[in-house]
Image 1 (spheres, one colour):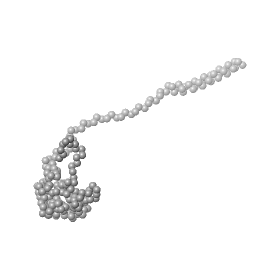
Image 2: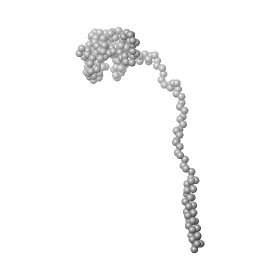
Image 3: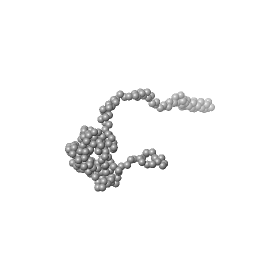
Image 4: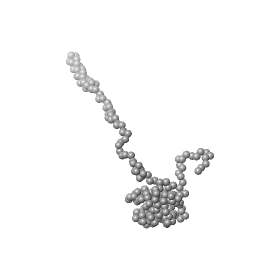
Length: 221
């Protein structure tokens, strides 16, 4: 009987050991398995060395003196830059009728584009209060020379710069006449045009914002 019990005990221990070995195999296999390596951040591709910019790109050429002269046509308020020539209201009337009236109206008041002629009662200057007030040559422009500069540079819009200097003088004279600033027989040239007194001249003042402040005690001009 005791021998039989011993055999049973030995058999049970054998099963337990065998079962323990079976469980140990996968654990040992897991222990031997190498842990996966951590993913490394991808390296940015190396930048190709930037080519040195050339000193010149070989585009264009220096402007010739004649080309510079053709563009150097600005006219200052004092008349500096006005070319030789002259014109009268009678000279400018037919030019205005053929080249300008289609945009500005027969008398410079009808449009459809900017109104050019007309003065406000008493030469008032209500533009800050009334943005609808027409800013004509006679009511708003401070310098008569501006009319010459703008017309010669930009008008007519379909062929800017095509008018001869005498034609521009004639047009300016006609527009000044429409604004009752010169008489019908006046002649406009580089000497007389800067002398035309514009009603709005004294309405404009120099913008001194950002200018150096005068020293204490200095007399203002």
